[in-house]
Image 1 (cartoon, rainbow, N blue to C red):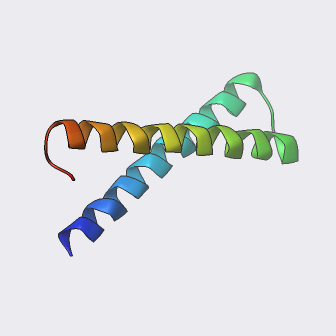
Image 2: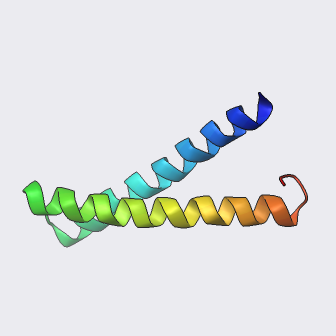
Amino acid sequence: MRSVFYSIVGILLSGLAGGVAGWAVTALVGWNGTMGAFVAAVIGMVVATGVWIGITVLLRSLGLAR
């Protein structure tokens, strides 16, 4: 049960980081509308995946996850 909780927390943290990154990039460039939303979604997914991988590698190297 605890591993499910930690997975949910990791997903939320990764998604938050991806969402903020996608929004920040499109706001910085000044894109809005459909194209801005599409670019923000792609950037957000890439960043969220990278954060998830980073968290997983970190926890495994510290011996906190299998």
